[in-house]
Length: 163
Image (cartoon, rainbow, N blue to C red; front, side, top):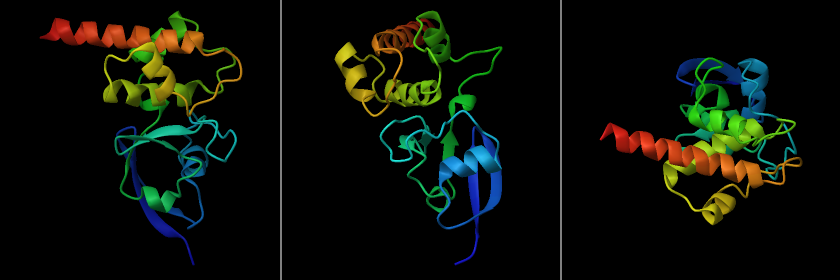
């Protein structure tokens, strides 16, 4: 079986590329599109370093074939904010020390973004459960949870102020 054309919208930008049937989405993002926020970690879906948002769901891009993502809307950590205009989650991870080495952080933030869309006002227990698919080997999770809860509070305050 030969390569096939795959169309993706990544962080609002449309891409059309050739992909092998067995080629993983994480490799297409990193190697063909130079989107390096999602990291290759365990390659078995356990760690979550490769987490992206695909069509409104968190997915581990190391277990999705590029062909399965054909036509998909994908958001990576790069699509959430910029160095000059951080997303509130990025800002809260920075402010509350929700990262150390930073390897898991893009997947954590991308998953947390979807979690807060699914549940805008989560409890600590709901954050811990909702983030269970993303592993951090450095932080002990307490500051990650604190960062997500702080981001939820900021987003809710902004929503209330806009009404």
